[in-house]
Image (cartoon, rainbow, N blue to C red; front, side, top):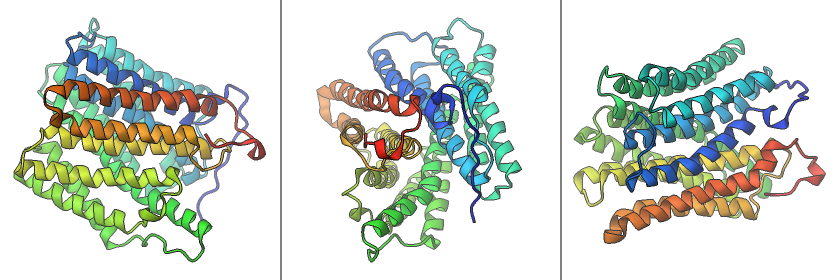
Length: 401
């Protein structure tokens, strides 16, 4: 039997009553702002950061936005895994402030000493790793120890970026790839648990006799292992033939795994279908990454954006909407606003994917992709801020968003 979470009464602001509330708001705000800043840098604007513009862009998507979503998810999931009290109130506010301090130090810290920028940015991932380690170990939740490895990997990747800033070694791009690879591995590992589980529960509710996702088996284990090997090879030697071959094999394995989850039966509920689509982006991104080595029709960055904008962007928004709805008493169903969010993030991924084919309109396509991306997160802020900042609603008063 899984642990039963315990909750303490929270008398302070509702936004600090659960980890997903502040971190999902901050993640959406930063995702919506960081891409316009990056597009401005592409057109010649000088960002007040010590990092090169491209390094900053990748860093803030992985260690800024991505880390915030991971924090919101884990702070919400861990009490369910361990039965321990969730982080609330002042400790949660301090943790969110440390994340924000890192974003300010990296983005507008051009006048600060490099060691101070590194310190201010690395405080959050180090403290968060310690918080999660304490909860998992105290709760004897050994099944989720891989989460500690993932958080340690995010911390290590971030450190590698700052080592170049400190003049120690040229490791910034290596660190950024490690951060992106860690987020993708989390999608493969955690998504592999929740997508078929949520699908099974929904299908049984809709039709008790419906065919449900295949149980976890050797195909799932192979897909996880192959994804890990492919991502490790991409981190270490992204242009190697071995990386390309492993990426193609991993893409096939991930696609086969996804096929077994009966995603074609979920299109009636976008809140569930979007998770299958996000996992599909993971398979497609792997395949594109591999085939690009042998048939370099598109720039290498195209495959990377299929994995980042497509897989990471779509899956994180899928989780940010589902968790926000389910943990605030609202129906687990996508209302009109949520459907618009999903349409916009899908449009952003498609526009970014096909931008290299636009010829002279390349930068126009990039701009359109950026607008769609920021609009998706802007809509999330517009429609989900009341959900995240106000107290939980009563079931009879709940409405889909």
